[in-house]
Length: 457
Image (tube, rainbow, N blue to C red; front, side, top):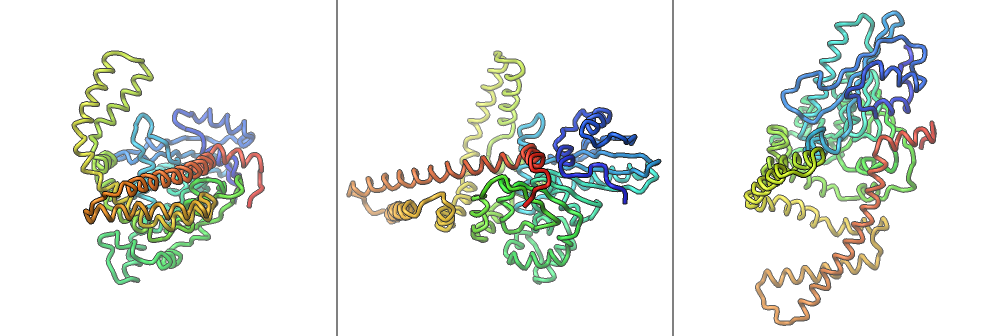
């Protein structure tokens, strides 16, 4: 078979990193020539953005197809690029990609971006095949969330000859069960229980689900090739139960150790199960009614309030301060105050998440100690002061009088000590998270690919 045009990891990563909005085929061809890829080729290039297809609602999905065609030389290659998670959507404040990461990939119920990605691929494949007379070779490429979409499509549909990902988000066994009716039927038949509601799946032992997944999907030989940095934050969270190892992975070591990965690896599975169960109902709402409905359900805050603030900030940056802007901001704040009662009613949601965290806090603190975030002495001090706080809460619950002032002083000292220890842990975690976020950046991965060329773990 003829060698593919984008034929190494570095050039593929660079292409994935290009923002193709507004890029012309001629400009892209010149760029490829500058990279030494296209020097002797006369292939036609067509670029199709995801806006080329019509979607009934905006799911946050973004992608690009690059089509190389030269019938004389037998070239007919379709590269589908799935974009990674954006901080915010273009001209929008809604972090749809990150909501999909949490509710779709982690919880497993959301599949809206998967559907959009599949529709984009199917539509353009048909279009290209209808207008070419050479066998079509299909290659998928993706970064982060885009890597997840490419791999998940490949596992379920196998539409590509090969898939290349960079700092990917792994496919989720729970999301596969939501997407693939055949896999869901196999689960129900094996465990003799219908997944109604779908959240029943979280009670099935993860190792048994993994065994079924390995029987259904060819996880090691599906043409998936991955490149990741060991310091990447997502690489740390690959240890969360429910994510699947697929294909062939090359690791570039850019940090000596990933402490967050070690912590995540040893968090009790029960913690992730309870977290998924808490978030499950919101996944359904997001899939049915979209981000705005989810936002108002979780926060109680009218979406027009945030929309108004966002537009005011955009206008201020573009036009500067003016009295029309001040009037608009005051109207937005007025709406915000009227929403306060709704916001207050949503506090139980937050308390559920905090209780989930609190129940597993002893084991979490132990993990932090084992990975250098807390010393053994600090761990003992933490437990002693938490015990003081819990005893005080018991006294309040029994409505006994607290006539001894020393009890109150001990309480405030305990709270202060716990706060100081928590502050130290959070600061250290944030430092490691910052390294993880920097390592996740595609430009960072490209830097290491250029620096170390083919040196991998």
